[in-house]
Length: 357
Image (tube, rainbow, N blue to C red; front, side, top):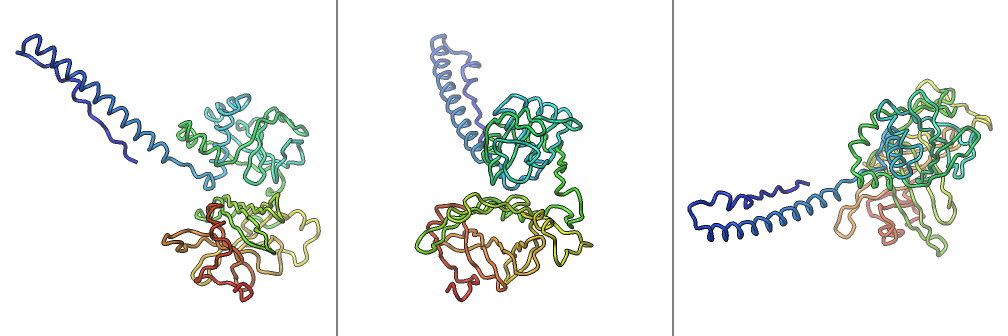
């Protein structure tokens, strides 16, 4: 948003007044000064209002951050919000570089262990005592952490809450600079070896990233579901059958890897939460298809962002589908209110199974 610039020229009226009587000059100077003051106050007020409006327009979409940007965001937030050991880490990162190391949560005793990893934040080449864990969309922060220990729990926040916080604090420039110095290292043992065929993380389409909500009626009761798409993760939760939620991490598969026809129980257990994704097109719509890492039968789950006309407005919706016919089994929206309003609504241009019609 462009901020208007106001020129306060009246400040100079009366400085160059000559050839007038002392009384007239004084009177005119006084009037000029008053006008100048009023003009200046008006200018400051309008400029301030424009600046405030511009600040409100700035938004950092947390769902679209890279892992390096997420590390920068968390370090800035914790340093400003909690203090303690985090400001020292921030300074070390700004003066050198910062490493976010992934460990197994089972090696620690966190108050909120989260799911998946324990993230150690440290100056590159050093051992850190500042950590965080993640459960669903909420991060939990610690300091004074040692292996097999818990450290001090500091607080919690979602990534979007942190993004809004640093925007409000005017730290976007620091955020961008620090993100360039962040390195991600995996020492959890889950992705170091390629024996399970993983060659890297799959990046979810940007338009799909973020939070979606749906509401559906089952047996006379409404079930509310939430879908949170990160850069490479999908978190799904509902208030009836899956209250804690479940996170699936999407990986790309190495081209030369052949999945076993009969994976062992150990392999299956190890691959819990791993998703094998691909993009497929069906009836002009690009779907993200997700199957289990060792899934041999079935069609997996399908997700797609599609535009529908609702009350005369073009609205993006999330299509949730499954089965051999990629049949729509749910629609999610960007707000809970819209999900409630459109509960179980079927759109004419989408592919529903016969049992749904």
